[in-house]
Length: 337
Ligand code: TRP
Image (cartoon, rainbow, N blue to C red; front, top):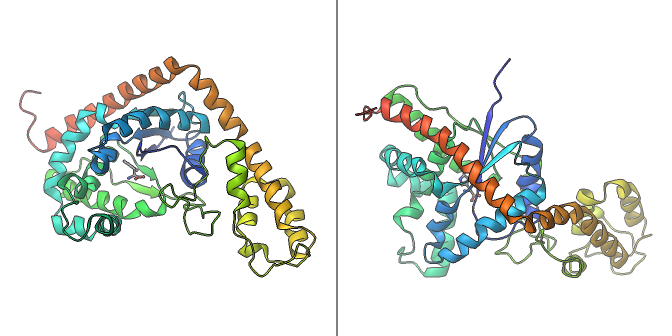
């Protein structure tokens, strides 16, 4: 029997999950948990690199995120959800790995580069907003992955440079201290990035175009009614091109049974956009129903949620301790072990 491969993925507790998270990542994790040894990290330490002056926000969102994950269908019997800051071994590994990467290399990391230029837009050009902790978060992310022995890391497209960085650090470690760590590989979902209903390439909280899993029916309907459609269609019975319409893009995700009809009617000018949007809103609400029901269950059983986090973190810590032991041995700092 071959051993199940281990998946490690992480998510920052900085807000509620939206459809972009669901279709781009979490929906995929639900399938993966069936066949892999799955760890999902609530990356509170990483969230603090950007939110160190707002600890309340991070704390609150640890629970919110856990509720959202369970609501989506992450099954605590199949996947282990754990809190990053409760695993000190991750912080310890970060220190050792930080010798294995240059500052210049971190500054060249495309994900970091983009994030630094976004910071400059907010804080001006002084560079003062870029802390040591922020610049080093790819190192800490390498510690997340290797602590849990993650072979595969399911992430969105924007995270690929971070996985590459982790691979480099692992190779460097192994070449200096001997073969100890596994080189991780990324795993992209079929839809690594969900477009916004406003036509933006990405749905994101900061872009103001997100539909959150916790949004109520009215709010969802309102957001859907504002979606971008084929701009060449002026009148209700004009023929249109569904391929340039964001409403159709979302119908493809939540209106599977009726999709052919929707496409045909749109092309033939037999479907007005207002009705088409109403149908989309209805189907989206329907799609989110089981997610909301599960959330309600867990909200009413917060003891269970706390227990899931506590047990998951215990299990993850045991794994991290094993890795730490091997790492210390390889680095010849296993003095009393
Ligand atoms: N950087 C990831 C994000 O912003 C979150 C994350 C933290 C992560 N640790 C990880 C992803 C480990 C994969 C593996 O979404």
